[in-house]
Length: 460
Image (tube, rainbow, N blue to C red; front, side):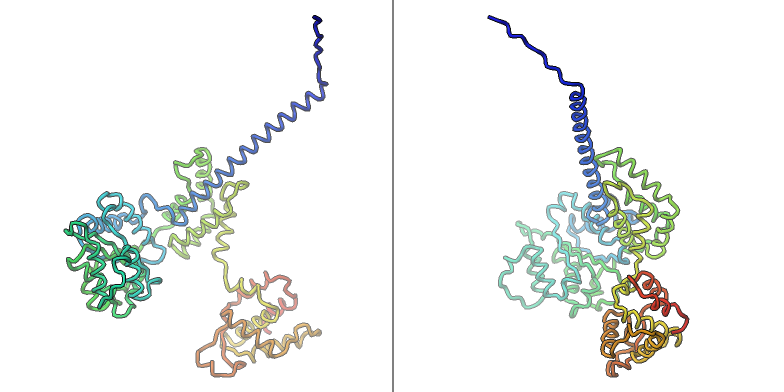
């Protein structure tokens, strides 16, 4: 048997090097792809964590600045949920002060107790949605899941219907009823219902020993008790929890830092440390401090602050994984954007010329009202100085443009009695000031030079 001679094949040096290069390139691309996916995941986690916080989808562990109010309300509702004691209370404060957040935090802490979690029922009503007592009663029935119990029964009065609902909630041994929490958002709007029947019956039940219920009203009106009828006011406990927070700028800056910082349990520890360090640097920047100071002077409520921070967060991406001072400046510009000045950018040249004519009339007559005829005469003065007829328009076209400005609420009638006057002679006022018009002209796309010069001239 002859041995077959095995010959070793050797690849040329160039081919070996090329294969090594291709392998290294594939490895490099794989690593970069993995890193890219990792960066995308981290970016998604940052957006999700901070958006949940800023959109109030995630409640804080402890509400800041309202610890005493939190303790008071928790004890009050615990007495209803655990001991069966009826109560009524009003939470009063300006919009954005944290009234709803406070109540949600209290309910979260209350439902951690097994007894309250097992027995407490909740009914949430809103004055903007339940505009009369009939709609409110249907909503109460729906939230208590008693549609089948009520069926086609006919009740003589609202009180009889409510008492039947509460009676249907008695426990199996008939010894006691289940406690019910009624939350009335926009409480002041319920006071405008006919005869205040809903408020009267709820507060009447809370004062008597019929069933353990707690009535919590949320309102932004300090004079809400003055809206109540005497019989309703006499049944209210007159407990009020006020959220009139007045933070200092240092506290406001600390809140911004807290809202933008990543939590300790963030998946990537190194990224969280780098992010939090960048937020510290951001808050120490002088231009950022000036922007936040302006917002603080404008509005101290946290809702507007969250809107500003949300606009900053929307500019964060995988390519730019940090908030820069320029992002905050741009977000501030969007927050303070003038809606009327922005509306001017979409006007036709004719409408813009009419606005400029009104501005000149305001300058000459020191803010006195004007009518279409006066505006048209001022516009004709401008046309007389022009050699071409580019801006010559018929009277009906000018009237239509004038009416469009009125629809946009850039001008408004002086009083309602002027509606009987002929349209050309109705007295109007311009709802824009000089700076808004000049700013809009600078940003107006392809604005003719002669129109700009006419606007900047001292007299029409």
